Image (tube, rainbow, N blue to C red):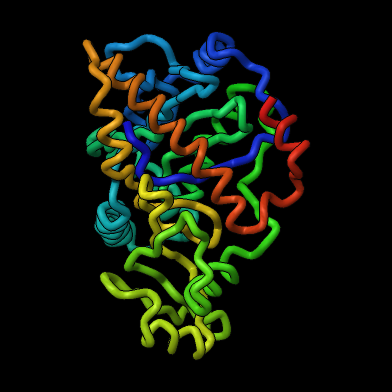
Length: 312
């Protein structure tokens, strides 16, 4: 249940739905297994797993949801090879070349024929709504997958104004300065991984691992015009992660101090353990996210007063 990646959104207004009301709204969009002739199905499932009934799990003003996706895996090469065989057979039998529209229609027919026999893959994406601080936090390594969840959440609620986090200062510029000038915030310890890119040479990048990020080699890349795109760091000796310039967080790790605190709480059931882990995790992220924004000059378009209003 511990999140491994973060794509974070700011709610534009106070989240007015109680956990119970939210569960009712999500019920109309509950997950249904993918049909034989469908390629994809998405819907909400209980965060606590199959044995649970509620489509939400709440603790301390934070409400977790879970999106399940089932997709039929039909490789395009299989469709193309089958189409080529049938087109060739039909052209031989009818002594003519098939047109584009005929081939497209045959391709659709082949797809519908093969879909029921295709294997399926299931994926779950977790997220929680922080009703106090006004965040929606998605455990996703890509914004595309995060958008799939927030779009269905918006559809389920009818309306949900939100946007990805934006900061006053440019994260790329500041993280590059951290390496170039050694001006890392006091509660941050640099890791040993980074991705640097050359904005003037599209696609040119350097990836380093297990290396001193303040070494002369890294300084040389920066002097040559490269800028940080991703940077590994440790915050407050509690969380390790890789921060992207789009403010997404990857390879999130809760370090020993946090894990020890989680282990100290005895749980009599899986549900109690889930609740305890969820509470600890969201408390830690509730401290990290505001600090992340502070590193880059604060949140754009949201001063302290507005932040309090958004948090409710």
